[in-house]
Image 1 (cartoon, rainbow, N blue to C red):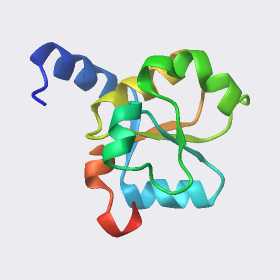
Image 2 (image 1 turned 120 degrees about the vertical axis):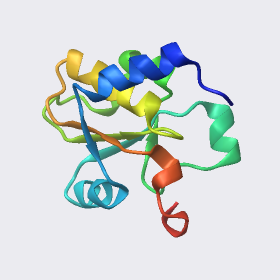
Image 3 (image 1 turned 30 degrees about the horizontal axis):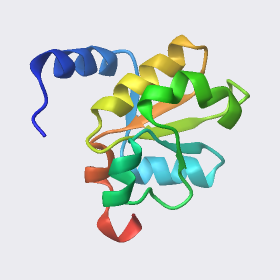
Image 4 (image 1 turned 90 degrees about the horizontal axis):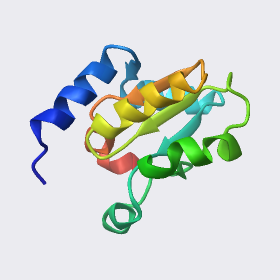
Length: 117
């Protein structure tokens, strides 16, 4: 799927306001209690299942459902999508909602080692 320039520009602007981590840093954060959230859509999960232990809340429903999955806004949250762009937008959005410890996996699931998916 080709990504349009407006979307990429929006994701790039979000990246300037968020923290990004490597898959290794994401695993370490999860091992210390961070909630791992997969923001991909349901059809994408059929193609590639979520990383073990991840909670799926699609990007389109994140703001509506996040308080059910992570009621404490101080809880560390690590987000990922397929390539890192929607995760960046999701991280930016959660920060706007008041979540204080949010990170996006740089490169998304495509950066995650295949043997750990």
